[in-house]
Length: 77
Image (tube, rainbow, N blue to C red; front, side, top):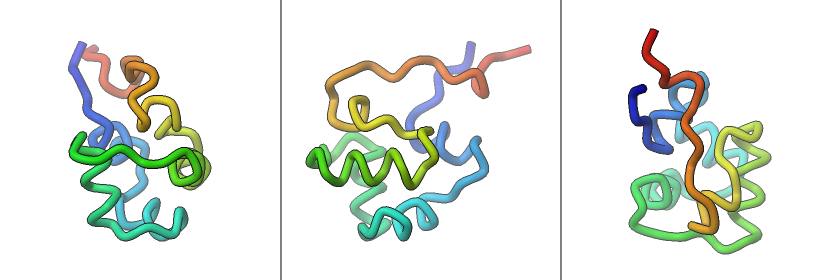
């Protein structure tokens, strides 16, 4: 299985960081920092990101409360 980070999982779903950031009303740079583990979002933003990404980004994972489950998109054939 290929280990996919949050950013890779988002991109593999066909969404861009800029699109999700705009829908969640946060700067793309801030979302990049969250996806790269440099920042943790507050609950309100984490929920907006989950909705904006159509559930690809889970609020509990973004906040560090749960581990990211392997994405079916990242499985090697």
